[in-house]
Length: 451
Image 1 (cartoon, helix red, strand yellow):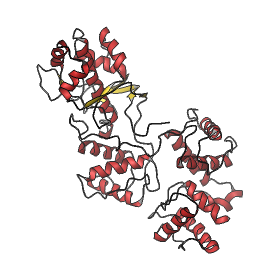
Image 2 (cartoon, one colour):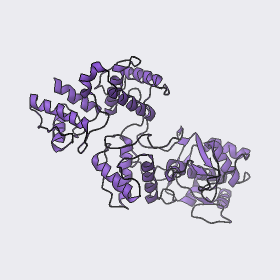
Image 3 (cartoon, one colour):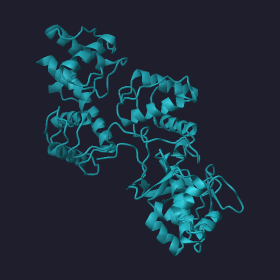
Image 4 (tube, helix red, strand yellow):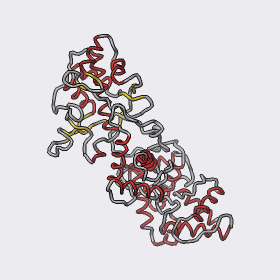
């Protein structure tokens, strides 16, 4: 089960740009994170310093690098690296340098520890300087030697420079460093934690740019969300499509980082509540919830037309059970994904792609049933299209035959009357009453219309 907030992780590797950020002639190299820290520590501090001073400096260096990575400081500025080798911008990294033995040993023991400000989750932007040739607001490297010689521990040294309101994270989890952009455009009809993240960031940016409309904090990308994105795009000279593609995603992240001063020793910071996820980023055996219903709907539809995927389980089942695992494993094998039985963001993306391909290539003998298939996007108030028209036809059929929902007009526009009818049906079917139609709600409406 994944964490319920976007916890910082220690990356397997880090991409280092060997020069200033704007030096396009400088190359990028990928190195293991531990080796990167060993290189920086061996380049910036002396091996004969007291061990507690060395540890304090290494913890600051780790936190500095993790702050850059966690907030995608350079990718959000359209660079293809995580950090530079330039001490004018980041930390001093020297390609192919040798490491001091004692520094290497210390890094191996503490590379997955870092500093945070109390109440925040992002690694502290732990600025530092040598304390002789340069003075700064953060840690003094030579000053840390004096404090260590006075018997101060690494934690006491760091609190001396960064304040008593810092905490230490020990044994942080390790994971490959992957970009936060989910890999597909986010637009009206999309739902999930990526939408929550966009809304939270836009709402914070709105404090500095009040023309951006306020968003609610649910997981649905509605027409209102589209309007907020369009306003943001207009303000920051992007094409006002209302769609969050990769460039808009990282522009939002860049402005969010800027207004919160993430790369600042005294940053406003990101609280655990702000980074909380409504759903796990991955689904696995014995997980429960509405996303399982969506997963089952997609898998069963694909399996119906694909003999390589076992046709197992019920559409409405909300438990990731043994049958789900079998279907996921078969799907991952069929489409060249890592065969884990866990539904990560790559499996999600492939599931949606394959589902859309399936419903767009329905065999001729099934064409009479094509209207019953979910169109692949969330339908909410304000959405328009043929899938809305099909939904309204099912609602109208329910209204005529059962007369237990408000009437609807078949217009292709999800209007107030359509929303009222959906909410009434959700109430009757004991579903969350939100007026929003996803895959599982679509299936329930179609089934109810036929009973």
